[in-house]
Figure 1: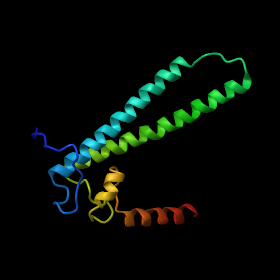
Figure 2: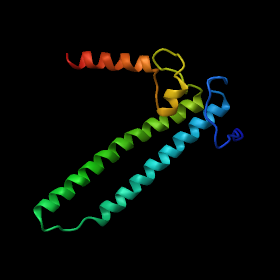
Figure 3: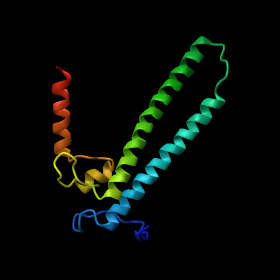
Length: 140
């Protein structure tokens, strides 16, 4: 196991340092781990709420409203479950040395894009092209 990389609290990846150096990789690794932990904590809170809110509400409108809220919360949690798998994949890319590079072109993904969306696997241009192609083929 490699030693932990020192990272100042106020560190932000900069364009003037080597791309995906140890500090940048550690920055993104920590960011992904915190994001994943937040999602898991929220999921646990949701499960606790759902377990506690299984009560019989006599008013039909109130019951319908609660069921709608519950369904929305479950859909949100399902999206976040899928997000966790993307976070895990990004963490694996960090370990494999593939993080920060576009899976379509091999080019560097901008630090700004990675900071905003650390699970990004494509440059902005490649992602836009991918989405345009998806729309065209979806209509077929």
